[in-house]
Image (tube, rainbow over all chains, first blue to last red; front, side):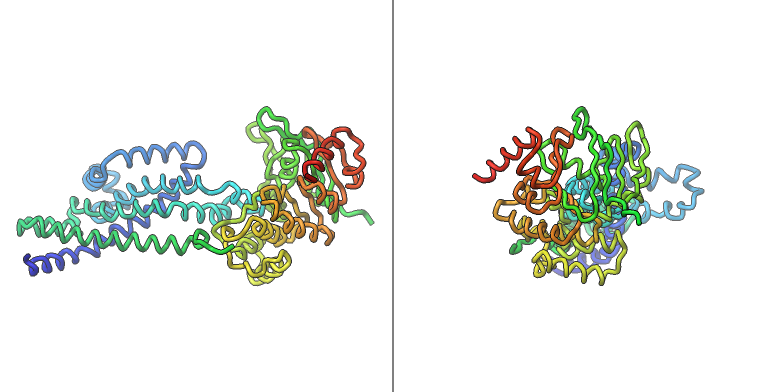
Amino acid sequence: MDTTFLLDTLGQLLSGLPLTLELAGISITAGMVLATALALLRTGPRPGAWFVRGYVYVLRGTPLLLQIFLIYYGLGQFDWVRHSLLWPFLRQPYWCAILALTLNTAAYGSEIIRGGLQAVPAGAVEAGRAAGMSRRLLYRRIVLPLALRQALPAYSNEMISMIKATSLASIVTMMELSGIAYAIISETYRALEVFLCAGAIYLTLTFLLSRAVAFAEAWLNPHLRAGTP
Amino acid sequence: MTAPPPTITLTDIRKTFGTLNVLKGISLTAHEGEVISIIGASGSGKSTLLRCIPLLEVPDSGTIAIGGEVVRMKTRAGHPVPADTAQVNRLRASFGFVFQNFNLWAHMTVLQNIIEAPVHVQRRPRAEAVAEAEALLEKVGLADKRGAYPAQLSGGQQQRVAIARALAMRPRALLFDEPTSALDPELVGEVLRVIAGLASEGRTMLIVTHEMAFAADVSTRAIFLHDGQIEEQGPPAQVFNTPQSDRTRAFIARHLNRHST
């Protein structure tokens, strides 16, 4: 066991951790907002619902790697993209990766939240209507809080997937955890140790995330904890 | 001096669900302080009728007036819909509706359930709503449950919270839709006692119920619905003891027998 090499590798890999966390944090957060909007559209009237069905079909049915490539290499081929206000962002691999990750997770997330929306008891909605709530208030105070609580356990899977999916950003030159791991291997040819170290870091991240979600669940769902009537 | 307009005026209300003709032209007026029990067999349309009052069901035709204010309707794609959702929401907030299945909001505590609409719909100050909610919890005998969640309560307790939630709207009338039908028999009494207490305060109430003895006891008027129409109505002593119609007589007899055994 070459502990010096392992510790050295771990140290180098950890320097990529902030970028991994940024990519995951931003795309999970933005993805969840987008997923909620898509889920509301999906459960609404026809044109919107069909658009979301198509969106989910395409983004769920193609590899994320391909989506990252398409956004990073593909968008720049359109003149109007290069001349648009977004070009300063879209020319950077960082924002391309975040955009691809966000759009991708939003597709999966919208289906999870749709499930949550459909699980909201009709009686809870009816009680809100009977109390004179506007549609907006009803969604803000009753429907979404209940739906998101319902969706959270399934959504934690999606968040964990996203942490792992950030490794694909290395393919568009992002030096996050995996990117650094490839770089070390190409210098040292010690794939086993380096990938084991990287794997350990991902494992720690996903463990911490799943614990965090479990805490959030317990905090948001005191009504599901056993109680004495 | 002119008399104040009736609290609720329904005129020739008709409603079909698909091919099912549920309400076949019902007119009903409820004045302030009246306690009206609505009885009838399952499928006679009594719940639908009650749900039409706050527009939880939209009638196919007929007019609804609340405190003399007519609910404005329009037609969309061949179906009648309320013309002014703001009007409907305002009128709904002036009733307290109590559901068969309580329909408390599971993610909120008892207290949050009660102050939700007063604070967010009626925009009353939170402190005032909380103080009133605590008084209402006292009234329904659940002062110690303010921090509990609905899932931690028995059915009877949940329904009493739902009644407190309805009262927190400072409603012009309380509408009860079979408030004890989802309860275990031993929990029915506690809920009926609370409702009877409210009736004795002179509140305006409409109660759809299968509890005949209770209805006879608390109401000032009883309405017997049969097949989407009012078959008979009058003082409870008449409807329950000396019904004029054969159908009413048969229904009452059937129900008294079922409950006395």
